[in-house]
Length: 222
Image (cartoon, rainbow, N blue to C red; front, side, top):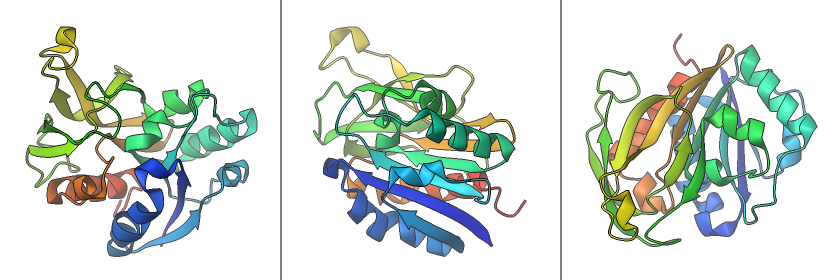
């Protein structure tokens, strides 16, 4: 049985509890994962090495929030030993003062040029069509927060988006990764930036991408 720690909660604007009930937990059930749910970041103080996957949908309200040194150590040591990470959207804006957390995830949210919470339509293009995570996933459009991020160049990029320059002219034609994988020791990390609104997560291509990403990060079937 694949064991998962699912940490979610924090800022209510990303509707973490609705996302859990109507999107994430059904995916975990379909994958036949055994899930420990928690809304308490102090769960990261525990020994995490018994989990195959840590799923992160924690959302910060303040830029000053972060993990303790002990929580960072616990998380990084578990991943280095083989525990996977699956994270989406606000996870790249969480724990803003924890540099090692963002190094682990592979990126950090900087801005949504169209505005916070604005349902701005944009295209996500698959860049690696041969990866098992993107199998059967086509390019898709969503209407959500288009994340502009600082991204580790060592990531393996699965999908990207382009900015039009409508809101910041100097961003016209610039591309930013929207989904990627990376490794940390023996652990696998998958991240997808889409997900401010539940209806974007429920887009069939987004759900398929994330389902396969969760399975990959947990080394399901391997």
